[in-house]
Length: 211
Image (cartoon, rainbow, N blue to C red; front, side, top):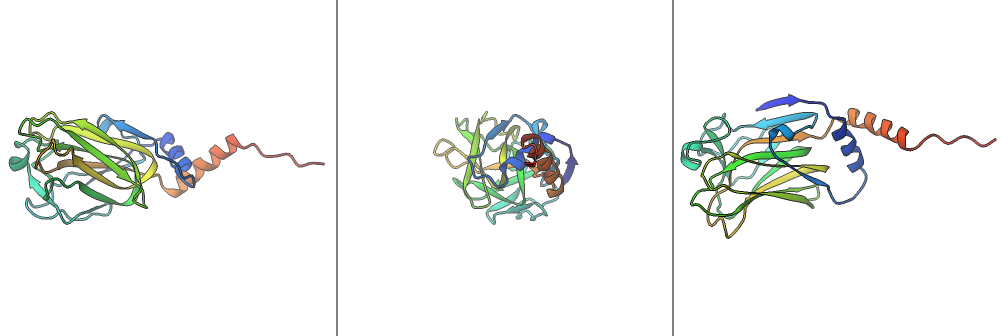
């Protein structure tokens, strides 16, 4: 697992606005890993797992029992975004669901196993802590069987889980395959609190006392 840190005041303010306000999430589609701007970015590349075995849960990710570490040589014509392994959903027609131990504002991954020259969309759906849908994005599969396409999004409401899925019945029985799962965490409470205080000070000037 890899972790990198990048500062973004925009993300801090987005987290503040989302906190304490119940509203539909604003979803922004990300074109690639370079679009991530969250304060802390965590990447899971599945290279430490054994092909054919369940992925190990980490401090940030919890995987369903129906997911397994998969060899790129078997499922993606030996092409992935990094290394030789990825993650496959064992049950055809089922989404790959991933839970986040701490909330995130951004999530994305590369996907593959899109062979047979089938025309379908890969979809990424995200949910809040109460399992309410926050929104989704989709990408047309290029049907070359390589894990060479990225799908990702940013939400202004914290995300607690995500589901990667392929459009059915167009994708027939193809299993979902992802690699380099990437998330951008919600800022630390102390940093978010400071940003909220600063924003509140700008928006709500102190009242003068009468008399």
